[in-house]
Amino acid sequence: MIGNMGKDSKLSIVIPNFNGRYLLERNLPAVIEAISYLPRATSQIIVVDDASTDGSVAFLKKNFPEVQVIVKKKNEGFSSTVNLGVKKAGGELVVLLNTDVKPEVDFLPPLIPHFSDSKVFAVGMLDKSVEKGKIVLRGRGVGDFKRGFLIHRRGGIKGKYTLWASGGSSVFKRKIWLKLGGLDRIYDPFYGEDLDLGYRAWKAGYTILFEPKSKVFHFHEEGVIKKGFSEFYKRSIAFRNQVLFVLKNITDPKMLLSFFLFFPYHLLNTALKLDFAFWVGSLMVIPKISQALKARRKVKKLFVLSDKEVFANFR
Image 1 (cartoon, rainbow, N blue to C red):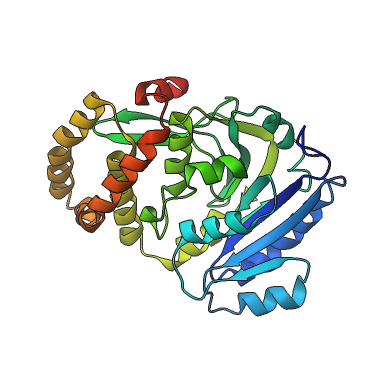
Image 2 (image 1 turned 180 degrees about the horizontal axis):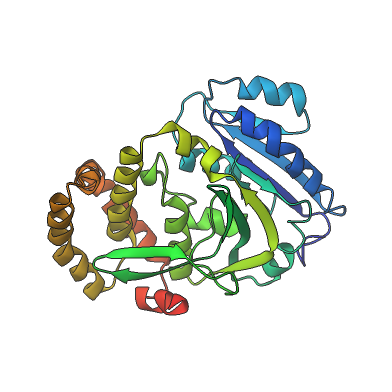
């Protein structure tokens, strides 16, 4: 049974994939095995393929017939791929796992009881992140607003709340996901979309928890983003998305003023360091400004907490 949600409730695991056949081959069996730890719950595994070219779809259909495969005809990026999976999911709870994530066999049971609280939107897992041969414990995020931007960072694993739930290793209440509009495609192809969703959830009056008893291994260095894009491009996208986040979500007048006052400073500071990723990212914002402002007007209707009230939970 899924918490107090009824014995016939379904839990869906959604895995977005783009050219991750080698990762699916290694990690998907662990996901399937973990399902057996919910004997009284119906469940499903959905892999949404973002127009892969590495034979992922044929591999899945041949080797994992129990997995539902949704195939996109056009490569669009992380947000749209995950949103499609959540839309098609039959579960009241949706677990999101990246292809480079291998869960421990008992990772699901600790997550479920938290959702007896109607205000809980998501629960993050403990990421045993494999980085340069070492294990770094991640999964809980904190942040504050400084020098015009949201500065987010890894938080201690003993805290109850997390500012956002990772789109690669967390569980979400589908009903609230759909109400919030899911991941915003403005951040495509990647970075910041789960942080944006988490922040919108907090401002809409929901909570996001961290559950250290739910553990997964996360092989970041083997993921498609890590391998498939240059560092300069990834940093440019990260800077672009930081600006879009502010334009979309920050409503506190002093924080907005800080953003506009510090923006020239950041331009000058990065130029002096010959670090032009910030400049490129800023230029990439321009064609998305109208889209960001339109999204801002839409999401503001759901906000019940101020920016200061949200950040107060993470200082």
